[in-house]
Amino acid sequence: MIALVDCNSFYASCEQVFRPDLQNKPVVVLSNNDGCVIAANKEAKALTHIPMFEPVFKIKEVLKANNVTCFSSNYTLYADMSQRVMDTLREFSPNVEEYSIDESFVDLSHYSISELDAIANEIKDRVHKNTGIPVGVGIAKTKSLSKMANKFAKKVAENNGVYVVENEEKRIAMLKYFSLKDIWGIGRQHKTRVEKTGAKSAYDFTKVPLAWVRKEMTVVGERLWRELNNFPCHEMTIKVDKKKGIGTAKSFGYKLEDYGLIEEATSYYVAEVADLLRQQNSAASYLEVFLHTNSFSNTDKQYRNKIVITLDIPTNSTIKLTQEALKGLQKIYKPGYRYKKVGVQLLGLVPDTDIQTNLFYQPKKSESSKLTTVIDELNSKFGKNCVKLATVGNREKQWALIKEHRSPRFTTQWNELLTIGKSKS
Amino acid sequence: MESGKANLVEKSKKSYRVKRPSQTGFSSPATHYTEPRIDLNDALINNPSSTFYVRVIDDSFSEFQILKDDVLIIDKSLTPKQNQLAVITKEGAFEITRIDKDSKEEIQLWGVITYIIKSTL
Image 1 (cartoon, rainbow over the protein chains, first blue to last red):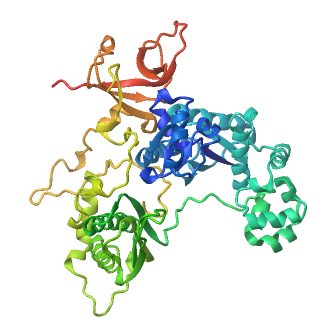
Image 2: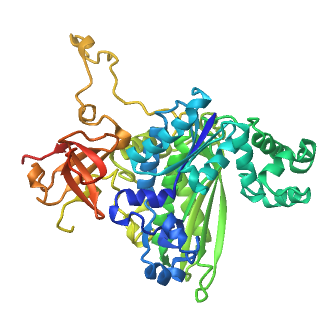
Image 3: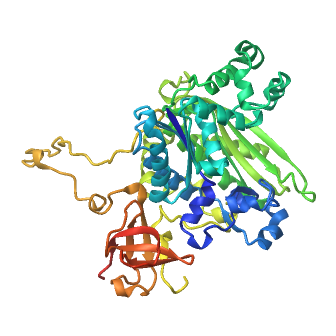
């Protein structure tokens, strides 16, 4: 049996662990640059006039009127809290698949069916006690069913955040509760097609003949059908596939005209993605740089452009990639515009062990992997960007994301610890 | 993180393995006796995933010999025993209390204080 453990409104919950004054109060978390709402807790969701992904400036008044506390996203904190949750889950099973920052599949095949109800409750209670993060637990024989059980656990109050599909009766009751659109992994197109057969609930879908599903919904639909019928098709995945492309693009905190600042931001992003590239032992064959103005603005002149650079040989050297990216940036940059965003993308990733060298290419000493290794080691020991290329500069404040309401990084920085005392700090 | 290793439990970097002698002349007579240096984490942190640190900013809790600038080590996984110190929340604020099982007052536990780090300088 497999459990799907999912944290309840994870980002908001992370913030609330360190803010007892916000218990049972509405909390929302904003996207990078404080642009829009990306997460809301139960209390905030209950205020129906807070739409998700709505630009903050449009709902500022509503947030204020309802006393909603807003946080800038503090991904450093969320990543550490996530790790704590996952580590606690590993106390129950050696086989934990981190599916996303706030949900995990946990292999519970070493427990007998009769124990699972108690185990599910124990998981829920222990994660909450040890980390402060509330979770829901769904347990079933297949991943698709456990995902659904998790949803069922949270949706139906009497389930109390836990649902174990331990017998046919409970499986059917759950499938009958959900409509087609609630099935994890069923797209709109397929949903419409299934509806034409007269099926309404998830249960009806499991009764559609397999031959029809195979013909109309391909192998993906067939797997889903089998999984919901209690035949596992998706194994636990422990190996993380290497990424096929790595990129980053963030809006500037302010609109920028100055080429120097855009160059610094670009260098910064190249260093970030090149580091990820080396961590997965890959090298990039192409590098894309793009730049654009704020397309939402009615007053700004608009411009957007991108350039794809083919590298002589695939590389993962920050120095080489930065040089190429800045050459590219120079080609697409046009003065006189107020830029909002720059991004870099590494493409055509190959293993760094079988880089085919060009007959006429002699790598320069500055691109040597030894230098890069030393820089990586220093940065991992003393902090991100402890050693950086001069092109990154030190004017980050003038272009970096706005994070006006970011909470302290309570668990990773000595100088941002949670404080306690009666005099208000 | 390296592909395929993402989900393994992170092991401590500490190594008890005998180090190959690095002396250029006589190899060290201590070769088979070296041990990793003491690490405070071993002594002070039993459950890393439930351990949190809190800094005290004034002398409000001097009755517990907890003073300004002390750092508390808190383990949320523990269930407090009689007379142990704990961080609790009361009316939305953090407090420190000594656990009294006989008390009728209900408390909202945040975590048990396991150590207090003080500077003597």
